[in-house]
Image (cartoon, rainbow, N blue to C red; front, side, top):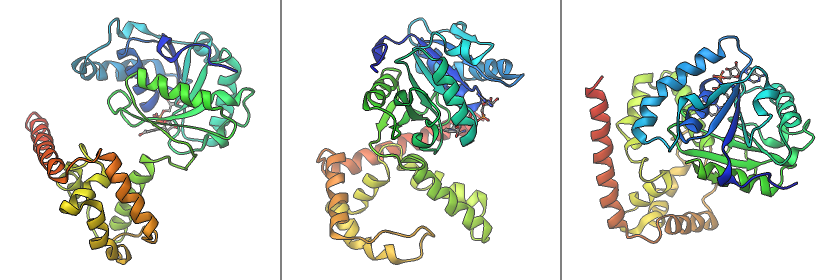
Length: 318
Ligand SMILES: NC(=O)c1ccc[n+]([C@@H]2O[C@H](COP(=O)([O-])OP(=O)(O)OC[C@H]3O[C@@H](n4cnc5c(N)ncnc54)[C@H](O)[C@@H]3O)[C@@H](O)[C@H]2O)c1
């Protein structure tokens, strides 16, 4: 099977499930100028969706609406079949329940025109586990967003064992055209990438509260007044690259490598082999494009000041 339409030519998108994430997708696609059809079985879904889109619209307007973008381009369908009948792309955002997703994706697959890619917002189920009951499983992929999907750019795209590469490539290109930052993954890893990182912090936070080691307030402040300020510009790897001074990641690992054996977290560290050390050093060189550490430090400092000022402005306006 081939894609029915080029990613850049899509005009009609269907969103199945219209809660926090599905509604957020609806707002995003409307702001990008798409015609959106939504379906959700809840009795109050239409009102809730209208409220979510209305609440998101000022932020989306400030960010800049695409030409022709309008809340009027939303149709709430009476049935799933009606919602997807003319769709050129489908995003599923139903509750995180494997059995429900297996059945629902099979129903979506049966009702969606051939060659149209179907993407799931699942937070962590591998597509391999969800696509089993579909007749055309090759067009199903995971397109994992972050809340709120109308503001956070990241979408992690990955296929399952029965997905075909064209569908993964098509979805990645479509999300890019639709204004997203895409990470295309070759392998299915439960939780994908960002949720694994987020979950490591989350689980440690829960452990610390359970053991009376920190309060909720302390935990949040430890990020918002601490490392969180560094992450908007450089992620955790390049941030530690700078912690190594002029010696970058190589010095950082040689200096702090032994700390990996210390009980600083309940998550066990991998063995810091020469291969792992080399991959981290090489990865930082590639990710930084070979930029000098001193220049990156200057950029980091400017970004921290900008982030602190932006957050202060929001706090003052409360
Ligand atoms: N909330 C998050 O931060 C987040 C982030 C990324 C991904 N996700 C994923 O997005 C998906 C949706 O999560 P959510 O937070 O929006 O949940 P939610 O509970 O807010 O919304 C789920 C919606 O699905 C509807 N629904 C129930 N049964 C359905 C069915 N059979 N078919 C279609 N719709 C149905 C519900 O009425 C509800 O409106 C989940 O897979 C979740 O893991 C959530």
